[in-house]
Image (tube, rainbow, N blue to C red; front, side):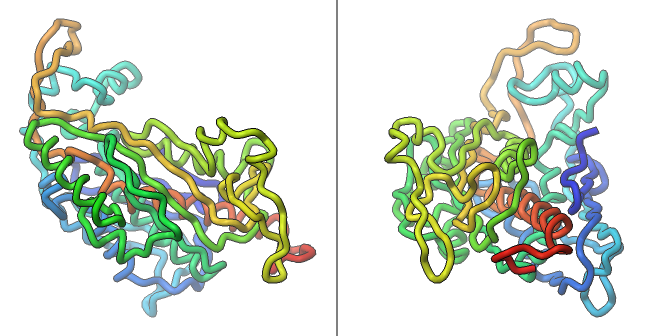
Length: 369
């Protein structure tokens, strides 16, 4: 039913926005990986609502409960890891009008068209509340990658509406990203974005933007032709997130402006390894990682829920007008940063395990087992 992600490192998420809880079951996590509950809590805290004046004021502590898969001395067992996150601040009454009116650009109509029934309160599974489970799973995936190959994943808000930060000379640090509630690591740009989001909220409106993400220290060789290309799985993972409308890797759409001779990444030998002089490919070639940083961007639309009156129809097809109520983000990007990182980690760890399963038993020239 579309609630399972991954082939070897598989997750299944469950729960509705205003139900009792959200949760995830992780299957395929390697055993004996050190598990840090405080890291899991910190990742969920970055995503949780109510963390600043720029986000929805729904109050959720998002404290994880580990139901299985972790030993008493803090290591993964190799068995399914089940993580439970209770919903404590439910206000289903705020969605009463949605029974008779479809919210523009929401999943209300399409869920009705597909299933003939929907969770009206908060949109159920279509709500960004579902991503709490993904971030929990992503924290486990990040931990596996850290111990497996030293991979590091960093995302940040690059632009909101027409406001865009300069391209950084190097990947921003977590401290720089977290320095502003906008999660834009460029202070001057962050101040402008902050003001823009506040203005949109005051007007009962919303704004969208772009998140940039970098995966560092991935080994070459992850991903498989033809249908399991690394960037193809990465793109699907990102576009599975609520409010996403675009994905590009490396030079992306700007690469279409160059000639092939200018766009190609020439190979060089550096530090005893084969590298590329530039990275317009974004860390993959032929659908397989080449050892360079995997760099990609995701476009998020303006939040669909706005407090301004909008024309719509109800399930009976009759025209009506709707002014949304409830608590909503005027811009999803600040809270989407850890979600993007989580999905990137889930794709990367799944491909790392797939690669080891296929190639490690027989060794490989020039590659560590």
